[in-house]
Image (cartoon, rainbow, N blue to C red):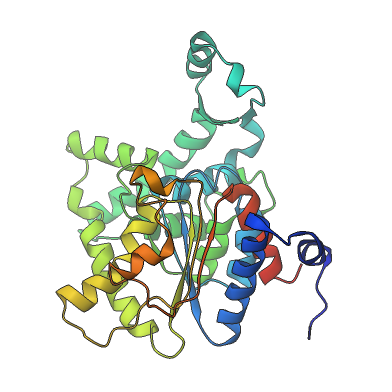
Length: 326
């Protein structure tokens, strides 16, 4: 090895030799090789990876140019920023499996919204962001300007208005790292998020126009242009964390360009890895093995393909640590 690897990578190489652990190593080495050969990588974030504080490792991946574009749910887009500004107010519930319906109701009454073992504080997280993001929405609406959801978030972060609230080391916020690099992001189904719901409420109250927020079809068109511009040479790889729309939406850009836009020479995705606990036999798209994607015109026969059937909160930081030589 040309560069000495750190203790995490050494531990992985020594101990992760079989089954899902070996798949983890193969995927990590494949990711690293793909970048070394000039490829670019998309990372897709499903679930509650931001609340799981993936930013601790993902922010450094962004800073070191190990990711070229991100697709994420609206929840992941906002929850990294919520953790940035309200971390000390979060409440951990390690015995969440033992909670009764009354316990859950008590959390609601105290303005805590639970994500597995972690409760997001409504007042300090949601409302703190709402005050500042609403001003940006309103200014754009008044000026008949239109932006994507992530662009409003970038504006808010880069303006510095949130710095007064920072409660973690800002280097552990992946959204802040992304904003500073103006990293391309697509956020399919943004309406399915707290900020999306809040925006919808302003539209229903006739305070904002729905058209002020660019949305799904425009994201797909924007992503198509980005993919065309970036898929030359070694191309673009696809690193999917979890399932759902964060992965399903962007991976379809290739068959759309090939089949619907009739661009016969558009390259397939050049690398594919999914970390998932979904099961194939349930007819779950999220659990489909990579080879199924060949039939949909997403992956080539020769695309390096990896699937790690495990917990993304454990696996993704380890793969990132390998890529970062930690």
